[in-house]
Each structure stands twice: as C-alpha cells, then as structure tokens.
Length: 182
Image (cartoon, rainbow, N blue to C red):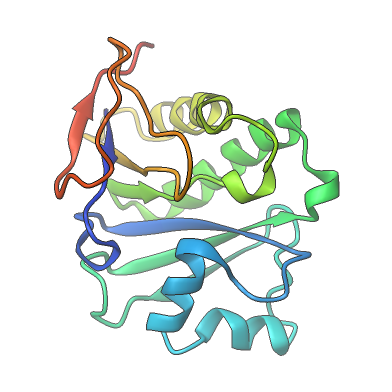
C-alpha cells in the first residue's frame, strides 16, 4: 500500500474514487466538498434539500463524476453533527469509510480528511487518528491489492510533514510519496 500527499488540482487528482466528508449541521457543502458540489451542478446540495442524504454519521452517497474529474467516482460520507464528534468516533468512522471504499473495489483512493469536524484539533492529529483505522481496514479487507491512498493537504493552516519532519509544499503540482509504518 502506498500513502502519499497530493496537491494536484482537484479535477486532476489521479484516483479512481474521491472521498469527502460532510457535516450534518452544515446546510451546504463547504471547502473542497463545496467545490465538488459546484462542479457537479449542486448534486450533493440537491440530495440534502430532498432529504435523500442528511450527512448522518456513517451514511454515504456515491456519485458519478460524469467525466468532470480524473476519478470516476465521488464518495461522500456523513460525519453527523459536529458537537457529537470525538476522536474515538472518528476512529470508528474511519473503519466504516474504508469498508464502503472496499465495496467499490477501486485501488486508487484520494481522501479529503474530515478536518472541518475538528476545528480546534491539530490537523496532523486528525490525520493520524483517521488513517490508522482506515488503512488497517483496507489492508484487512483487500490484502492482495496494490492500493494507493492520496491525502489532500489541509485547506488552511498547517501542512503535512514527512517522516523526517520536513514540511511538504502545498503548491506542488504532483503527489509525493510517504512511507507508512505498519
């Protein structure tokens, strides 16, 4: 399994499925998910208005990218209400998100981590908590697959760092590989 940071333009991310997270108490998608919603002509917002997707914890919707992204699929996973989110709930949610991704059988996955749900936590802590469960479940569920998991940089604030503690640039146009210790 390869874990890498990616800073390519959203539409150009080399993945089979883009995975985003949505808060139930945000009436419209924001951040990168808001951009995806805009590009897909408000498909997510329309599902929210029609009460077909309420972004409840563990719920999900799968949308075709209709050729507007390099990835064929856009998966949106509900986080529930921000007030109900904890690090342990995030850890459980990471397993559920991985199980959903595994059912798609797509080996190249791009993640926009659910940082919006934890505005007071350092992004690197959320990254560690989420990826620990997510990657473990991917390995367990599809051990023979050569999976690539790409993680978007935080939209604001801190950048990710590699194993040597070097800050990875956010303006880089390609993916940079990172080692993941099992």
